[in-house]
Length: 350
Picture: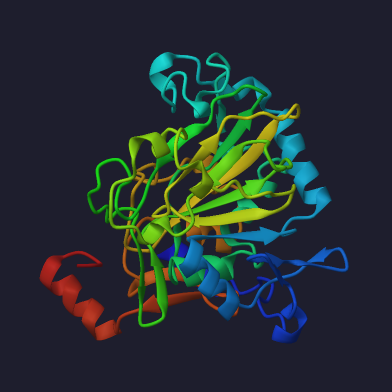
């Protein structure tokens, strides 16, 4: 209860509001620019164009969200923790079928790095920004809901030339089995976009045409059938597989209900992304939050960031949430109802 009161009193976060006129004309090819005169700015909310494009394609590319300096700090933090990188060399850890286009050279594995939220300061800061930054939080609120929460452990992915990609996976209708997958599902009801799980990827290196990396099948979040195996492995119907061209500082937001994967990395420079997943306040796919995230994730974190680390439970039950003004608000039931529950159950909450 004490921690909740502390969260409730924290209102010193940057305003999310930016006049709509400042954003006019920022849409190009389904992407939204956040850079104005070299300064990244906050979006008040998703625009109608963005809502349409996300519903149409199942993903958005936000251009220039993070500055060159911010990206440099993130990469420097990674460089200082390279000894913790683990390459997927065991065949049982590979994410592609052998000798398929996504398998790369068959030897070089993807490299994974975790624990960024618990790194010593200032090295954790670039990654903690992803939790509640005013430039991104309005998208999380619009696509996952008020009270959104971090679901998976965040992951930095690094790939050298020849590294394998990742076969197609995900889908509201699971692309492999053809069965409905409520854990990843996308929906739109009365104009409200819903996602059971949202992927958010900060681009820490350039991804040029033909380089490889993130790929997605536009509109597959609304598909109703199993994907052909050849397409899952990148062998057939490749004209329907899209690799967005992105630059350092861009952010890709996608529904896990949209079938996606990664192409083998072909560029000479190292691929780097930081991948986060967010879920609605009452839902969980991962379980690292249980019973609590690592203690280091909370040390020095802001009240806004700590609110995103809350476990899954309803916004009605004293949950600290980031509202549209960018301040923390605690949503609660009446004192009398809470008092009644305590008498009936002997606990603070039902």
